[in-house]
Length: 134
Image (tube, rainbow, N blue to C red):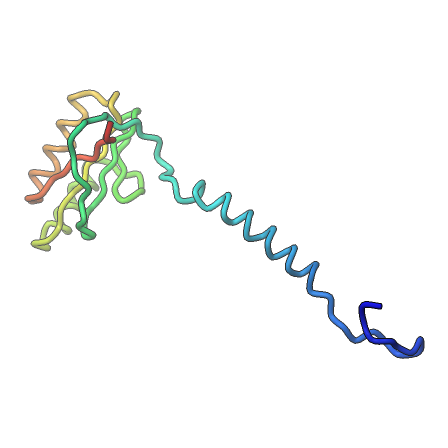
């Protein structure tokens, strides 16, 4: 037999951990599958492609996103141009602040120019563009 002999009147005091391990593994697999879906940006932007470019290592960047519809987002929150100007002027007081601009490739030149103009007039010295590498 596999285990020690027991008297029929004694209660079983062993804990079977196999079902617990199975449940934990299933939960772990669920988290591993859903984590990449949660980490994706919620704003749908189709980036233009370029064969050259480098990854920015700065962490004090403001992220401005222009969606296909022309909606402007600052750090993931929808915002209008006037609020964008105020927020960037506040951030421009820090000498280390910079803006990373991400725009859908279908955004009009007029929409892109107005956002760039607002950013530059607000006092930001460093402006970078986010692209998708070919």
